[in-house]
View 1: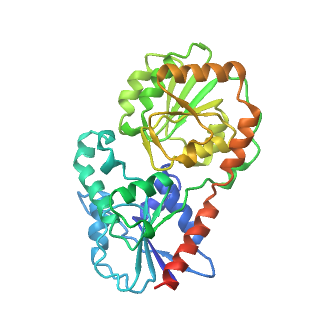
View 2 (view 1 turned 30 degrees about the horizontal axis):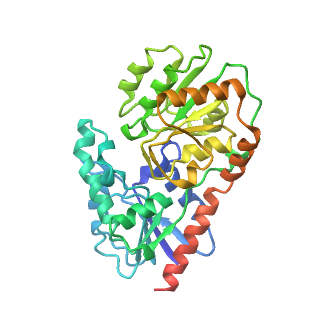
View 3 (view 1 turned 60 degrees about the vertical axis):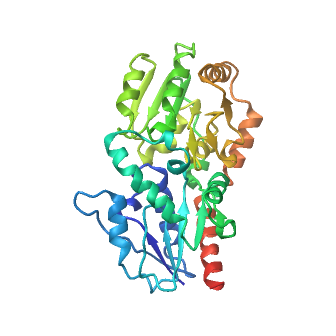
Length: 346
C-alpha cells in the first residue's frame, strides 16, 4: 500500500508550534518506516511568488500525477483539486469548520480578509473527499451539518507526545502563575482571559501568554500593559514546551470555537487545572475535566479558589489518566488502519 501525504514542505516542521503542523509532523514521522505501508510526502515544495500557501497548494497539486498511490491524504483543509489521482482514494483530515459555520470569529486583518475566502474554499472542497478524518465529535457533527455523508467520516482524535507523561518536577516558589499557550487569533478569545485575570485579586500572581507575534498580538500586548502581572512571552519553543507547562499553576484556554484543542490535553497531562469559556464551542472529548467559566468574573473566582485551596487531587489524577488516552501513536495506528480498510474495500 502506497500513501502520499499532501502539504507544503515547510508544514512538516515540528518547530512551528501550531496544532496542524504538530499533527502533520507526527503523522509523517510515525508512519514513515512502517513495514506494512510505504509513506512519502507528496507535497508541492514551495509557494508560488506573491501567492499564499493555500493557492500554492492548490495550483501545485492540481496537475500532479497521484495515480501511483493507493491513498492520497490531505492533512490540512487547503484547496485541493487533484485532477490526476487515478484510482487513489482521497482522504482529508478536517480540523474544524469554524470559518464556514462561525465566520464572526475570523480574523479581520487585511491579510486575513484576503485569505479567508481561500480557507473557506478549502473547507468546501474537503467535503468532496472519498473519506474524511474528523479530529473530534464536534467536527464530525459539523461535517454532517454541511452535507457530508456520515458513513464516510471516521473520528480520530489528536494526541500528545509521550514526553508529556513524564513525572513533573517540583514547583518552584514563584507565586501563583497562570498560563496560556496557543495562537493569538480572534477565535482564541485571549482578551477574555486577560480581563478575567485583571479581576483576580492575588497581587503576587502572574499571567504568562505564550504565542507567536501575529494576529492580535499588538492589541493583547496593549491590554496586558495595563497590569504588570501580565507578560507577553512570544512563541513557546517546542523543545521547552513541557518545561513551560510545568511552570504554571493553572492553564486557561477560553476559545470561542475549537476543533480539538491540543493545549488542553497537554496541560491536563502535566497535572494542571484547565479553565475554558463555558459558552465557547468546545468538543466533548477535551472539556470533560475542565472548569467552565461563565464570564470573566467567574473565571477570576475559579482562579481565586484554585490559588487558595489548590487543585483537587482526585480530579487532577483523573484528568491525567484521561489525557493518557490521547497519544500520537494511537492516532497514527488508527489512521493506518483506516487506510487499509479503504484499500481493502476498494
